[in-house]
View 1 (cartoon, one colour):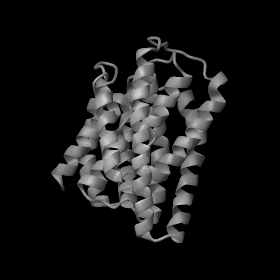
View 2 (spheres, one colour):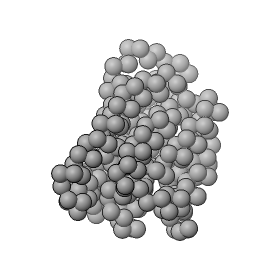
View 3 (cartoon, helix red, strand yellow):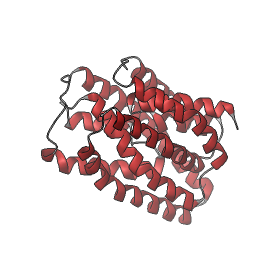
Length: 257
């Protein structure tokens, strides 16, 4: 048991439950840059530890009635095929190129994606500060095709990089559902991740890219962290958390290169 890794899991789990963003985008740099894990194994391990973390977060948000299940269903209809497509693509590329080359591609790709996620998180804060307080019920039928496409794209990204189920999905949902309660967007995003992350993790398990002892250490911290963060959701402001998280991601993205 590595308590340094467990502490990282605690901090990231709290961020996931609190804001619905930043989990994998924070954990990936920790695993790759600070611990020295190869990018492919880091993606698989991050997905494996995220499975129970997201499930616990979904349960807490369900108990708090902050999950819009129809929104989750629409996202999952697109996200599940997207996650499967990402796993198959990764397996195909792994057979075509060397493991060192694949890890290099993933590391640079993760660096680019971290820049994008940092911008998205800041943009999401801007949207949140200029949106209505939100309503308990917002019609989803007019936006259903767009929600399906968001689920498809996010599911694909999650399988390739483990990043996207929180930060990217949340911000896109802000854009198309500006009148929905923030707590419901967070809860629905966590529930959506709880459905597609196990599929992506199973694919990486088949590829042999999961470090299970490291996964256990992460879980020791992340499960209580996501419970704490989910309890805080909607209670504490994230006006400071989001810019700080975005800055860390941007600086980390530079290190990826």
